[in-house]
Amino acid sequence: MRAKKAAVLVVDPVNGAGLFHYLEAFFENGIPFRTFAVAETPQVTTNSGVALRLDDTVSRLAGREEEYDALVFACGDAMPKFAENADKPFNREMLRIMKRFAEQGKPMIGHCAAALLYDNLGIARGRRVALHPFLKTVVRECIPTDDKAVVDGNFYTAQTENTLSELMPRVLQALK
Image (cartoon, rainbow, N blue to C red; front, side, top):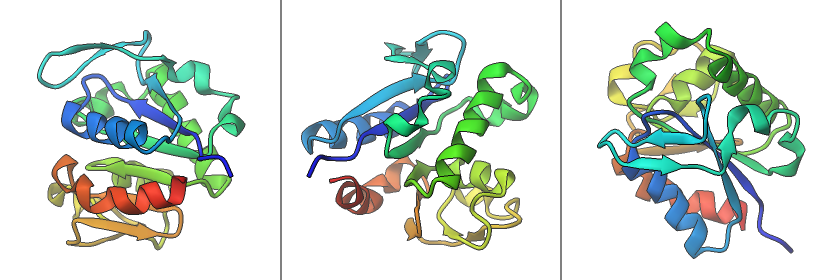
C-alpha cells in the first residue's frame, strides 16, 4: 500500500515553523508531498524573512486535485491581510481547491486560521476544530474548542504551529 500524497498550500509570508513541521514530518515518514505557493510565483518568504522557492503555484494545482490524497494549509502572516486580498486570483483559487478537496472527503489539514477558512467556505459545518484562540469568536458553523489539536472526520486542525506536535501523529497515521 502506498503512502498518500499531500498537496501543501503555502501562503506568503508563511509561518516557517509550521510549514517546516509538516514538511519534515512528511519527509521523515515517507509521505510524498508537493508545495504550492498561494501567490503569483513559486517564490515566497517566511514570516522571519527567509526566501523559499516552492514546487509550483496554487494555480497549477487547479484541475489536478485527483493527483493528491490530502490538502495541507500552512498558515502565516499573510492571513491577517487576507480580507484585503481575497479577490486576488491566487486566493480565489486556493478557496476553490479547498472546497474541492473537502467535497471529495479528503483529509483537510491545517493550523491557526485554517479552520476559519474552512468555516467561511461552509465545508466544516458542525465539525469540532482547533484554531488560534483569537479566532474562536468569529467562526460561525464550526465548533471551536480549546483543544490544542482536533480531528473530526476528515478535518485535522491545530491551534497554532506550537501545537502541531499534538496533531502530527494522527496526520501521519492517516497518510501512511
